[in-house]
Amino acid sequence: SKRRQRRSRCARTSWRVKTVEEYEKSESKKVQTPKKYFKFSSLLDMVGIVQFKANLSAEALKQEQERRHCFHQFLQGVLQINSEDRWTPKQAMQHTFVNPEVPFDPNWRPPLD
Image 1 (cartoon, one colour):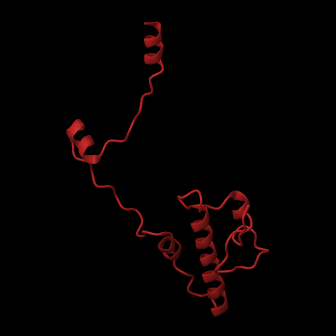
Image 2 (cartoon, rainbow, N blue to C red; image 1 turned 90 degrees about the vertical axis):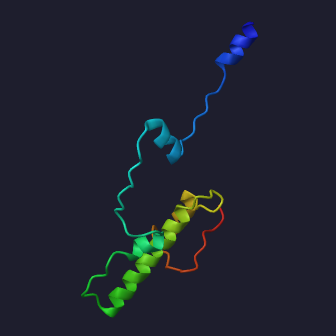
Image 3 (cartoon, rainbow, N blue to C red; image 1 turned 180 degrees about the vertical axis):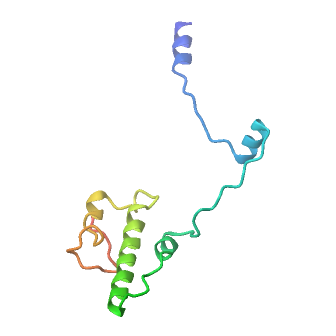
């Protein structure tokens, strides 16, 4: 009997998020449609949505486009969901976005740790 009591005290509780349907049924109310604050659906859209300054020279425009491409590349590397594909902090520190001494390479891959 002591053994059973000990087991029941050690029982694990598990939780999960309710589906929208389960929530609506248990709370007796409809879930409101969330507001959409941003008009982008990808990192590339997010980086590209900001307008370029109107008075940029051709060279400055080219530099800004490269800077944005660099930023996008960096975000893609550090925000990967799969931990195998995600850059480590050491790898991220070697990217042009963080280390401007390294020239930008559109095909850059981080070195193995």
